[in-house]
Amino acid sequence: MTVTDHDTAMPQPVSGLWRDGRHLFPVRVHWENTDAGGIVYHSEYLKFAERARTEMLRLADLSQQEMLKELGVAFAVARMTIDYKRPAVLDDALVVETIVEQLGGAVMDLKQTISRAGTVLTILSVRVACLSLKEGRATRIPKVVREKVTTSVHKDGLVG
Image 1 (tube, rainbow, N blue to C red):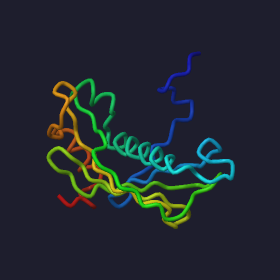
Image 2: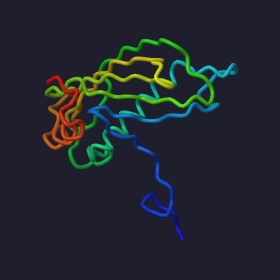
Image 3: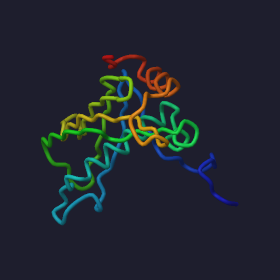
Image 4: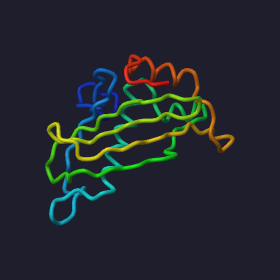
């Protein structure tokens, strides 16, 4: 028997969940995420946040691969600010919370917090732009993408 991603007898990766207009994504800190002292490298927080954004779209029934193939668009980070409050350490169970603050014509503004047991460790403000692969520049977010994101957050947390 060949194991595939669609084999329902096999455990599937976790995509997190939507709660009150917020996407929550669990992350465990592994050895590969830390320095020799067990402290998480600063760049690992970006990876945690990127994974959470991908899984947020997946839970909104948006596959980035299908967006590329069928719509010819992809999201790319246009701007990001990061505020490191406290360090995460080896074996920590973290939660990345993502809030869609604004859904504009061609951009989506997100606030992401990474926390441990309710204590905020890192805050990220992220602007992603919708890019046309054909034109190589920003383009309007397709209607189907906008509708799926809006439906998923139940309009909670959306400013515009």
